[in-house]
Length: 171
Image (cartoon, rainbow, N blue to C red; front, side):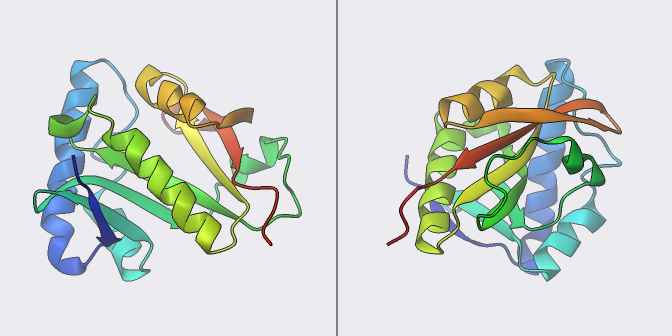
């Protein structure tokens, strides 16, 4: 399955929002109360697009995966025992795979793509928070080499703070 990644555009907001609506519906079916109509909402996604921080992965010209990269972190990130304090890092947010493409390797392929792109940009580490009640996301991040470094108590419950070192040699 070929995925073409690019920065999302405002013209794609409706399709991006519908992807999240479909994913939330699937998470509800699986009894994973991670997201809802409050977060992430359309306004948050529009803000991500305006800031040029939201990326899409297209599969056969349909958006199949979305993610956000920036340096914004919740105040709960102080609870993390971050290993790579001095390194260049980014925060990964709102990774979302459309239900039609879940369990097909799209999430793992997207993480690999993100890691490669960040290495090219000389980023040394990626941080994120993962919902403690989402076994699918936790498994994906663990397989990709992310390590739990702390806990964050956010609106929907406990999240695991995770971090991955991308490379130890940037020469």
